[in-house]
Image: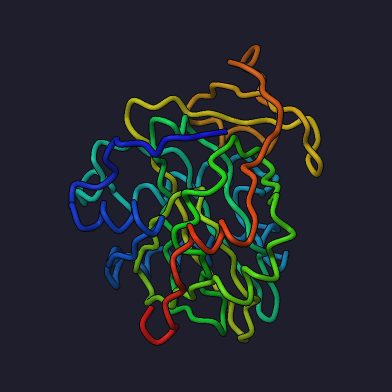
Length: 284
């Protein structure tokens, strides 16, 4: 299926917009030292069993009150409207992402479709609360891959390009070391992954998603979590991803529409032609 890339702006800043359009992500200085410490303290003071996993995202917590509290706390620290980064975007989702020591690999994937990507670009903020590099699970991304596979992606993401994983891991990944408090701002369509946390300390990041003020939030529900053939697309309220079990089928009425599960055909030649060359780690 042919897709157009949205022309609706994400950033006020032209340079940030150009980099996002080209690479699918930008890295910006974001939180100050006091804000970082506030987030660290809150995380320690509010434990949850989800963090016993090797990789524990708070959005998968079984406690809805906890998920709501996390989202409200992160949004209160981010104060996005005061910072002036985004061009009339609203808050939609937030959570902590924790890697236990010596655990927590995350394979290459794309995140779900959250809005109509023919018209809008949602952006996710990934903010580490400690310095990150390859030793403790910094992000690894395929630059420019946000332009690939813009078909509907279900709430349980299925990466449809297993036949390209060897090439991606060998030749296409840019490692993104970051300082605590910097923000990795990216399109959910970007191919991204991370290595295990090989240190003795927990690696915690705070994530949040923002969508254009006028965009309808969506949930793309698959008929099968592992081998989907059919997708139902629901309009959901802004609190849906905090107040309902993550990846559960919405219960707000019938879907807006249904569609077969498809993925853009992709071979090694097209991958290499579209994806931008990796940046050497020392220069990332």
